[in-house]
Image 1 (cartoon, each protein chain N blue to C red):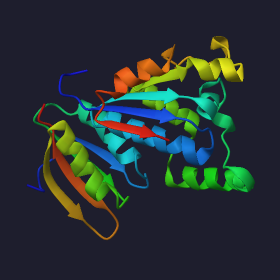
Image 2: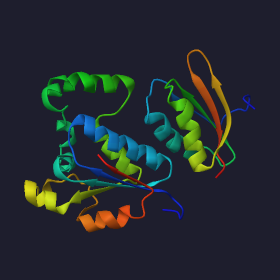
Image 3: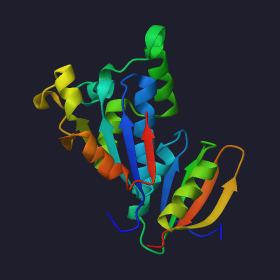
Image 4: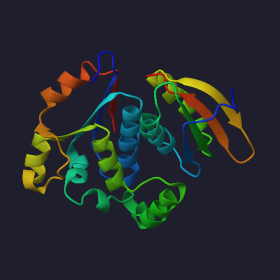
Length: 79
Length: 139
């Protein structure tokens, strides 16, 4: 599932709370329903914030990958 | 707003940098999560609603001297300046209300207010909105 090709990538690296979530809410609008938004972040707070945001909007968290230098989320837009 | 959307009501009573950022950060986050957000500016918070007011926010007391340093740090981690956060919040549908009595007490006129202010209201309006709010904060 973490190989799903995203429809759009949001590079939120270097941005701190609340920006990753704010940008995500704007970016998801540009993804077709059923499509996938890839979010890259460095803010450790995003680890809990992005899934919390996705949950509040009813979107599906396909995967969360944590590398040395970044966190990568794949979010499916459900509506 | 859709039925079932959570509501957030925040009273903003101060205009120092450390007290102005939290309500705005919370507001944009809540808005990003699909919540209805209402901000009520009263007492010193009113100064944030004046045209150019947000630019003047400083750290409180003696820490005033470190305002520039803190602003620099915020810029470095990517947090926008207050004025920009207010515009962002506005774009995301956050409502900005000014307290009528505060305006009378501080001598602030409607013409002095930032164009993003939705209305000038009283405490009963706040209470009416807050009574159905899921999150209510006094900052």
